[in-house]
Length: 250
Length: 353
Image 1 (cartoon, rainbow over the protein chains, first blue to last red):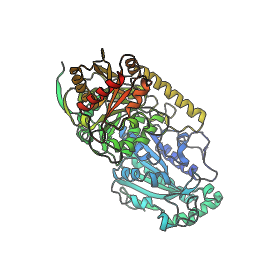
Image 2 (cartoon, rainbow over the protein chains, first blue to last red):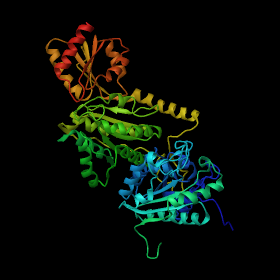
Image 3 (cartoon, chains in turn purple, red):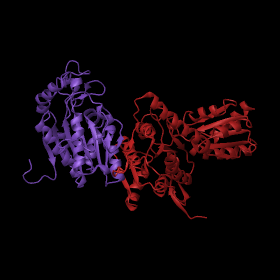
Image 4 (cartoon, helix red, strand yellow):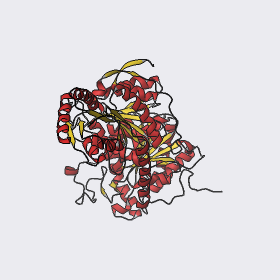
């Protein structure tokens, strides 16, 4: 009996991510959700600009590659063209929380029945490690060589905390993939976000804290520890909003 | 003869879009085109369509990209400053080979400019409307009736060639009311096997994408696109000739400037000046051959524009500078008077004589 196999919703393409990067895990969790809900033939994904720009090669579904930050607007168009389709975006922190802030907030405000997978690794990875909207105070990057000085560069953007106050949002949760327990929780959250869409419950966003060993300048193993010690205290893991929470849900 | 209804230019665009099968409109308020959005907000629910007021012009064109990628007809409209914001979307539409119908009801610029009519987005429309090598088909209506017919045709051209068609109008024609016929005939349906409609497990995934990291491949996509452009330049050029049979001077003007020029040409003829006009209806593809041919027959040209002189570049290119071209220009929201055009014809007659 096969107890562990590649989800059908992933293609056979070799992923282009750096060794130790957790994009691969997050791709897998998204694909597992698509498999479990049996929606592969009706799902359309929107890829961002950034490290996951080539997500269109990895997901075994129809895909559109959007301009930087515009994925939620493109997803809005796809969903409005055919509301029976399941539409998701997969975006990084620069894409979603800097250049695409307006598209993010307003797709939530409209309660678009789409799912956003927001991968936060606190850095611009694809361009070689510049300060992101979610770079932690004091964190050294290529464009914050003395550490992020909040007096000059401002504070990190906490996306879930912002969106929990948007009436149109149905489900907002922050998860992480730095250990098995958190991966399991992330899987549940991503599955719920897709399930809500199939039930027409509206806008959902799952923020996934992710690593960038290459640009953080640490080993893959250390990057998981670094995430747990530095990112989780600043970006607490929890469900920020669930309009349809059942009694007994955390 | 078909029954005519009195319509405002902007509303005529909107109704023609509905007739062309467009059921998705995304807009953002900006003068002088807001009537399109207002009309669509009423009309779309009546035809089970989608009207969505976007958070920005950028979001609006990306929503158009989404609908178009999903294989359906979509449009957005704006005026000059808003069109600048859509430039990124124009480039992606081209890179992804997606059909789209976009309207620019021009106002004076640059910057916030003003809200009076202008044609000063000619370069933006026909040249630099985004990064990369690409073209848009640019249609220039000169009447409310043409707002209807060119909108209807524009949606067809967009699907036929998988590219953006821009209706380049101006605040005057957008705001004026004229009787129009809305009889447009049947909508041609195009197969869109490339669209993202869900694989249903029956085919390989479709990918709508403009990223090609291998330069050899990216170059090839550009070459293929330009082959298509070549065939468009051969088959889709539209223009009107007015009193050109015996003309010695040729006015070149589009949109509202062409209407003013007609009056000027009539006045010129009364004075014994043999003037005529070539009115480009497609600004790209530009009626190069018609102008080159006219250059053999006329002494001089007048380019009449609501700008500091933009189309004049295309006129001079088309005629290879064989004849003098006099610019008749008003800018910033001012409209040339027939007297302005007449003065330019007088000057052209002297130089060209």
